[in-house]
Image (cartoon, rainbow, N blue to C red; front, side):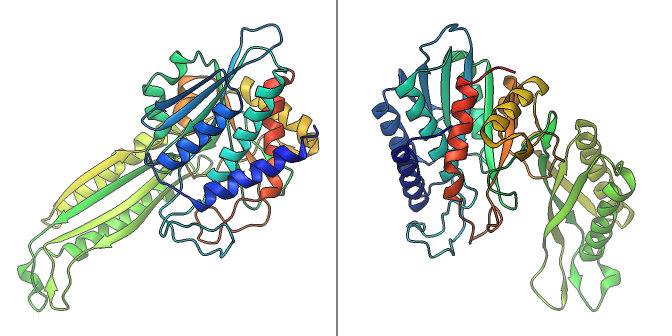
Length: 384
């Protein structure tokens, strides 16, 4: 598919504009206003704001028969609380905020597809473009779904892409099942009896208890989870005391678990609770555990994964599409949309760039035409 050079240039300019003005979570007022203005200028049939607090939905009706199907495609809008270190001419103008995950590129790609399809209308059914806030920890996909996204706009299938540093430009990767992991987090407070470090026998040493808890938690995955069903549990923060000669009365541990299967998710949560409670009790301490479930696993639907993979193959060639990539243990709130409707999620190669969520990361503009072509083909192409 050959796209108009002016469209590619416009998409690049939009991407740079979004990159220069990053906003986080649901507070994407400038971004959403700009996206809505562009969508209206393209001649969309409907542009609705405020879905899921600050999400935007555009509806474009095709001019070909049959007019029965309605396909939704999502782009995420929010940035990250990271200080940018790229020194690019369009680097973030907002200190401490940065598009370090490529959502600026995802928006530009979907806007390019909308502009092309609104002008041509050479497709059957209805195309719904979804611009979502708060992917980076706010669960914006879930909030939009709960706000009636799918029912209100009659969406029958839903799709999304994400750029992937390290994958060659011009390539795609997806699977017919699990793509990304569930992400949970926990806090464990160990409560003992503090005192002078020179008289440890008069205390319940929370530092010692916490050490035993951390060691035991690491055994959950290595000795309790099937090694061919990947999972990760990491302790990422330990806070206790502030003096050389005082044993603190409390230690707070923070951590995360990542799982692909529902069974492992349940198992890890139960083991974290049991291990922390029992070890603390053995040493005369107490443990308070707060375990919070985050995004569920991102699981593609086989039929829709086939449709999306075929669209990618028509755009990039069959050899450039990996149909059954191994899942990774990052997470993505598009999982909530895939729980609501059949659909699929795909990775698009970003080349040899800095990794996602890195201060030196930048979305690769060379990939914009490929992403736009993918969405145009998905909407206009064959359903096989």
